[in-house]
Amino acid sequence: MAIRRRDFLKSTTAVATSLSLPRLARGAEAASIYDIERFGNARILHTTDTHAQLNPVYFREPSINIGIGEMAGRPPHLVGRAFLERFGIRPDSADAYAFTCVEFEKSAGRFGKLGGFAHLKTLIDRLRSDVGEKHAMLVDGGDLWQGTGLANIMQGRDMVEVANLLGIEAMTGHWEFTYGEQALRDNLEHFKGEFLAQNVFLTEEAAFNDAPAFDKATGRVFKPSIIKELAGHRVAIIGQAFPYVPIAHPKRFTPNWTFGIREEELQKHVDALRGKDKVDAVILLSHNGMDVDLKLASRVTGIDVVLGGHTHDAVPQPIPVKNAAGTTLVTNAGSNGKFLAVLDLALDKGKVGDIRYHLLPVYSELLKPDPAMAELIGKLRAPHVTDWSEKIATPDRLFYRRDNFAGPIDELICTALRTELNAEIALSPGFRWGVTTLSGQPLTMEDVLAETAITYPETYVQEMTGSQIKDVLEDVCDNLFNADPYYQQGGDMVRAGGLSYACSPTNAIGSRISELKLDNGKALSANRHYKVAGWASVNDQQGAAVWDVVAKYLRSGRMLQERLGTGVTLKGVDGNPGIAG
Image (cartoon, one colour):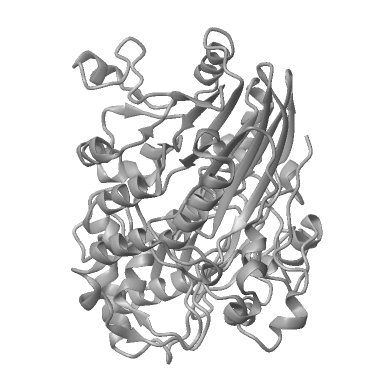
């Protein structure tokens, strides 16, 4: 299967050294980067993990994304220059800025923000019209409704309105479930597309009590798939929701439902689509995470392409995976609205003859915002703009989140928790959503909410022994570095404030974390009790919302005086291309 992809601009460096992006490319030259040669007879457009970021954002890609075992040195576990070399991207290009952390702040000034739903709308409409409405469809891989203060207040309803205007025809979910069953079902009543999840079933008790389900006979809660006719060909889209919702989030949000990868059920469903329903192509719309999708593709046959999400990996080219019946292509389309994936299929005689795939960065300054979408976004945001525009602080460094072990955003949160709650140690979850703030750019309350807005934001303070703290670190580390992708739940390492340690990712479970020390240099004692602050607990907590704690700390003006961060020493991964510099 041939895969083609175009560079952003052939002459980026020569012009961009002295000009900003809007002057870098104008008119036909700017438009040409989104000119995709028409191919085949069916086009599927794919967004994922936008996390409700309605407006363009800065988002720095990771400098640490370590793969171990079979995944070492393979996509998506490549960062920085190793990533550029693998995919043939020039280090000084706009694509290097979009896909990697290389010289991020310098490039941010040259190429500007990415994403924004008004800009996405313009690009999506153009790519649809290029092939004709009867040949195209738009799907979303989930984490659409969560990630901002607005989405949190409206419980995702704002994003349903945006999705309808954007024209999303099918989606699956993850953080959508954290609004609870009633809010989810209320939103779906207003969603014009289909919510697909082949891997969500009723619990035995819920089935006995006749709880609502799409298929009472099997206990499937949601429709597993749809068949879309594109230019006379039948394309099946199967939804695969995040498999670990009740583990990663409070179970009280989904007490009647069980999740899981559900390989056996998926294989049966694919076989039925191929057999009884006689589809020409099978696409898995997945929120498993890329490592899980790569393993799944090697075990489940009959899937042509996996359109993946969850782990926020922006991978320019599909990864071919061989299985017992042929080859499945696995993709992942990044996050925060930065990218739009374009999958073109040549369908012929009941099968996919060939494929072209493009992962297009959404350079907001090269795309005119769609007026109707811009108006809707303005209307949705209007009641809150004044309250959330307060400038709380101006950081003197780049604030970002996405890295395996630490990011300044979570270092700030940990410092705020320790300071405001008078704790020795702070723990902050390794979420991958959240935007980047450039040094010297004011932080607003809206920015704070973009890093913290969840439905269980309560902070807590509790006593924990040194042994218990180590166990927490070991448990999360195994989730990140287990050699079997099916035991990885996504996300990064829990952030620890007031504590340093060494980590050996290639070691076995229970032996990855060592050399734990407090800020004062004293070793963490296994039997001593420590005062630990945190947030986003799966258990009910009663403390203040984390965004209020962080805002209070920032307003105090102490951020620039106090040392942020914690030390993590990596062992046994020298030369791993998942580490940049």
